[in-house]
Image (tube, rainbow, N blue to C red; front, side):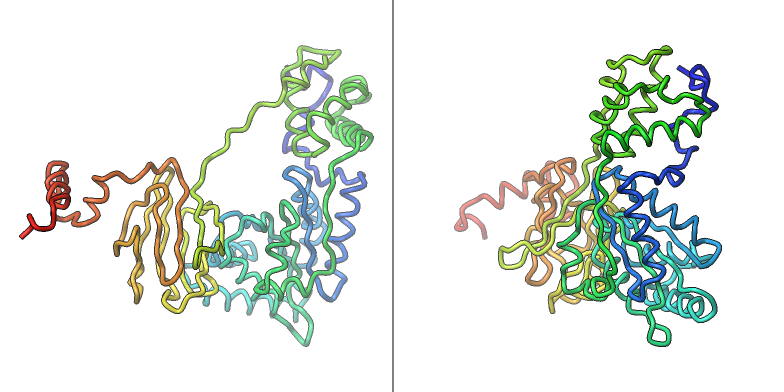
Length: 402
């Protein structure tokens, strides 16, 4: 049903009414206070974490609105970014027209900008969402940015947002430049029932409701709280569905129970990096191109003397992942065979120096006997018959082979 039929100017729970206006609840006030401290504290880095849909990004956008006229600001979604993507995205938001540059060139450009801004006005503000979904190379680039100083003062303010406390990231030695600058770390908790009602009523008022409790009585507010877990993002989606699917007042409780639609999850490739049988990394692929190498700015960093700085590239396109060797010194091996490029299959094992990387991606299918034969000499085996003949020769007793 249209929102106008409830006496509303617009749907109260869509993106046109910003959550940045709705910060009267306890968790959001605590988070906003910490974000403002970032601008005053010499260390100048804050970490806000909590479950998905808890309001982290809304808080960050509020800080961005408050500061954008006083300093250069950028809000970056770090999900699936490798180092060059992170740096170019920041530069673009700071107003640079970035051409194709190397990671080192991008880092130098950004350093010059940050230093100039700090000397002339205020230190720029960088907000990075989805810290937990960034690749190691991008995290290393973030650490390099955190070390920039002007006149013995840090030259960049940082706000980091993540799902979960990210202790496994923030506590790693490589993240020390960021961890040393933390002036606060706070978890956003879900709304209480009272806070849920306040949140819903304020949005209804902004949409034109004179009496919000006529639309969402107390029992409906409680039901929406229970269905959403008190998370503002989920609260918005469920409340919007209730408004859209109700036939008028009064709204029935069963509308709340059936309002939320399931969200389809997308399977993504996973790579488990091991050395001497011990897991050293577990990477969920989200970017379409991922660099593997010994360089600290690689997306999958392999600390191995036999691995080149830019050793190999993973290219992901829907259901297929291609491994490409970048003319590495010691080669890239898939299932013990040296390759230049190869379409990877589920459970394939990549060998780089003393490290092994296993791909877990069922959609890519399993490798068959024909695939193995094809790996031996793809130029010569052009059809299934050739592959079968090659396989039958391979299976003869050694004495029969001359």
